[in-house]
Image 1 (cartoon, rainbow, N blue to C red):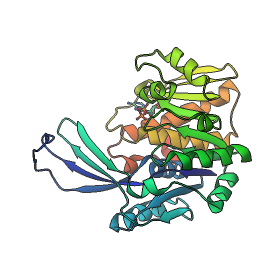
Image 2 (spheres, rainbow, N blue to C red):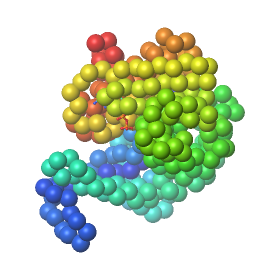
Image 3 (tube, rainbow, N blue to C red):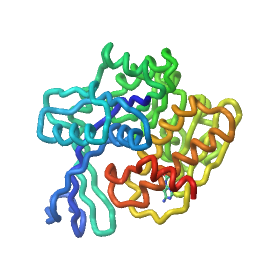
Image 4 (cartoon, protein in one colour):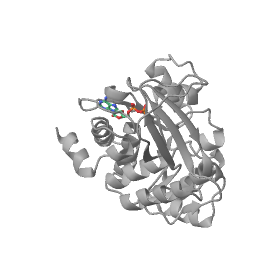
Amino acid sequence: RVVVVGSANLDLVVSTPTLPRPGETVLGDALRTIPGGKGANQAVAAVRAGARCDFVGAVGQDGFADQLRANLAEAGVDLRRLRTVPGPSGVALIAVDARAENLIVVAPGANGELTSLGADDRAVVEAADVLLCQLEVPLPAVAQAAEWGRNAGTTVVLNAAPARPLPADLLDVVDLLVVNQVEAAVVAGVAAETDVEALLDALLALVPRVVLTLGADGVRYADRLGLRLAVAAPTIEAVDTTAAGDAFTGALAVAWAQRRGPVEPAAVTAVLRWACAAGAACARRPGASTALPTRAEIDDLYAQ
Ligand code: ADP
């Protein structure tokens, strides 16, 4: 069982021929509303990858909340710890031009109200095999959940996105950090052009295990037991890499839970290869949360 403590946003997406400059108005095509937010996406990714998953999060009191709730419920995510708080839901305003460049403004809304957790949340975290968090909800809630998880023997996985420097009390209770190269540099407090080996060294000084995602190049893995791995992603024709990171992270949490925290190189490699198959399966389809792959689709690509 996986529990996600994180965000739910509704993405309001409009395609336009060109992006507006400050003060400019452009006409776009029809508005699309797409459920998103890293927390919700990773919860849906985990369920599709074959796990049961609780979502600890917040939506507002507006029509968007109904859509966010319905999407998660339809996916099969357990919503007993999803609260409704006064005010608007989290929203991302997205404009995309013909070259796929985008402008994004996020209004955190209800996600920003998830400042503290309670006994019922704690019970769910303690009962899970893996706790999966991102950084789109307030840090105190993430740190609290992570501390409960660590004390209960729940594996704590932190996808440090969007990246920010992290306090020691949170880093001290993280078992596995999942970051892309940009996020890795921010968390480690080193220059963006730092090479991969030095990045891994810097991150291992902070947490015991690190997964560094490298897009089409797959992932690097390093742990304090001295294991270092490079795992390739399947070769696919990338159509839309939005949410590929969420597909990867959700699947990683599921495989990690099923293998009960692998240590052997072959087992760690298998888990990472399977998660890469999930990321790639998402990237070869258009759409974000709508493109998150099922277990069968992941198995299929993994076997190729
Ligand atoms: P993020 O979007 O968070 O920066 P990445 O782009 O590194 O994350 O993608 C996460 C994972 O998804 C990668 O490690 C890889 O396994 C898979 N993936 C992403 N893009 C591709 C691609 N073009 N081809 C194959 N796999 C991909």
